[in-house]
Length: 297
Image (tube, rainbow, N blue to C red; front, side, top):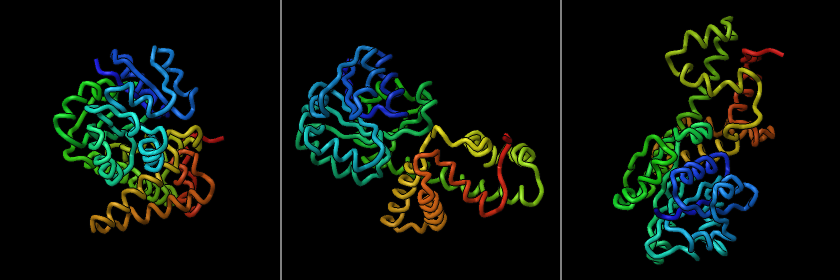
């Protein structure tokens, strides 16, 4: 079996890496926080001293990192992946970065005789534990076929998106939709509550529509508990910013998404960046003079 190197042991990366390891793949791991690699080390993984060493020891190198700047540093920086990648090796990035970065990195890997794929994922850390992710893959079809068995270890749905970068386009489309729908549902529920309908009635009557689709994700709002975050406001604002930037590049008017991005920035300026992204709904509550609570203190 191919040796898989994994960089980025965060909330999403760790369960994905654990599932790869459980499937029997030899693992090499690296993280800026060495203690984060412990679950993999306990399972027999080898700890690399740098991203370059990890790449030297791996057939497939995977990264799952919080933002494009970090990915670029881990790939191109001192003792980065490019210093160690093997000829014939594969680099797959599972971060949410937009299409431009991965496309800019491809020529650098080609110079090393290596291949590049973007393989972002959809769903939550809890789904990652249960192999319940959706993976979208962009790049050469033959390389996708080679990676498919590895992707199957942590995802129950693997989709070939097409050329390099298109998987990240898919990811931005779906993240943007989820974040924008959060604001739409917040406004709708605020209207219903302010006009006299009890929140449980709104949730029950809307159970087969968008309100029902987002109900479980808005439990943080209904309980007034935004810690610990499932997905931070800071990362959500980053993702919708990548989407609106892609819209400008593509000549697509995105009035709603740009407005939602401004709302997220407002929430960020309240110091809520490290809280769950749904905390932005508090702005709607405050401006409407209501609270959306199913649990009262």
